[in-house]
Length: 247
Image (cartoon, rainbow, N blue to C red; front, side):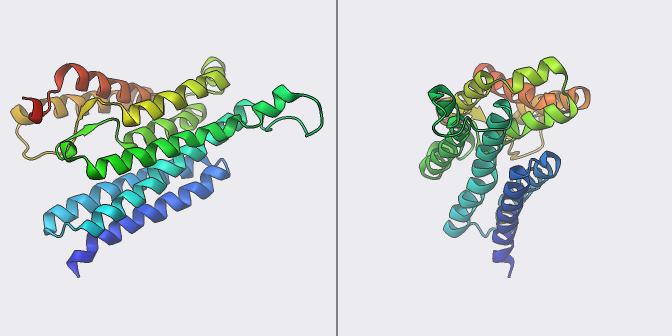
C-alpha cells in the first residue's frame, strides 16, 4: 500500500492542475492560483514521501512529469492566453472580411501564450534524461516559472494600480515575458535546489538566506514579490552557486 502513496499525491497534483485550467479559462484567478499552489504542495509531498518510504520508481518519475505538465505547463499557457486576450480589449480581432489584416494578425497573438506550454514540455523532458540535475537544476524549474506567470493576474488583483496594470496588460510586455519564460525554462544556467540533505547552516547557507529574503518580500510586497523572488533566485544562483559537479 505504501508504494502507492507518492503516486496518489502525484494524481492529486494532476487534479489540482486540471481544476486550475477550468478556473483560468473563466478568469477566476484567485481560485486558479490556490489550485496551482495546491499542485505545488502535492508535487513537493510526492517526492518527499517517495524518498521517506524508499519507494521511488520509474513509474513515479514519469507520472510526476505528466502531472507537472498539466499544472505547471498547461495552466501557465492558458493564463498567458487569457492575459493576451485581455490586453487586446477582450476580443481577438475584427470580423473576417473587414479588410483589417493587421487586426486579423493580432487575433492570433493570444495563442503565443502557449509557447510557455511548449517550452515547459521540453524542460520536463530534458529534466528526466539529464543526470546533472540530481542535486541542482539546469534552467528554471517549471513550478517556479508557473508561479511567475500565475503571479501576473494576481498582481492585477491585489497590487494593481493604473501604471502597473498598463504595463502587465501591454501586449509588448506579454510578448517579452513569454519569450523570457521560454528561454529561462531551457537556459543552460545552473540553479540551486531547495532540497535539504541536512539542516546545518554551513551546508545550506544559500538556501536559508534565500528563504529569509523570500519571506521578507512576501510580507512586504504581496504577489509583486513573486517576480522579485524569481529574479533574486536567478542572481543568487549566477553569482553564489557552484554546482558540485563543477567544484
